[in-house]
Amino acid sequence: MIGPRVVIATALHPENPELRNKTYQYNKPVTIGKSVWIGANVTVCPGVTIGDNSIIGAGSVVTKDIPANVVAFGSPCRVIRPLKPEDLQNPQAAN
Image 1 (cartoon, rainbow, N blue to C red):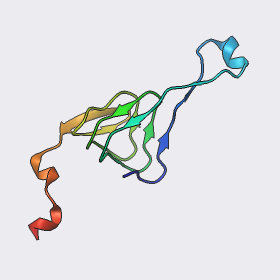
Image 2: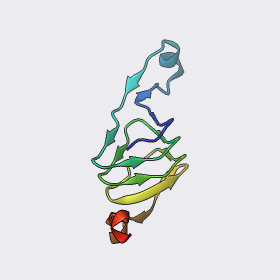
Image 3: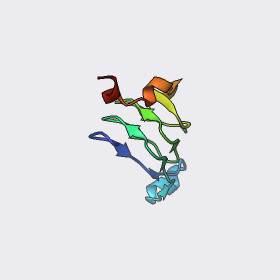
């Protein structure tokens, strides 16, 4: 699931100003695992991998890899906690 206004960026520019002035650009892939939930207004930077089942909180800037099965948020995005067993329960089942 991907919320509104999410940016998944792959483009990078060289640090060398001469190359930038020549409009050089290159790309690094972004990898998003299975069953990932990315909240609204998240920016995912080039070269980042987000592991399976992880949740990225709204407004985060993901600059580094996020492992599987965690809740992560912030700017820069960081792991807050692992997913708990109750996170994996169907909330409808409690009713």
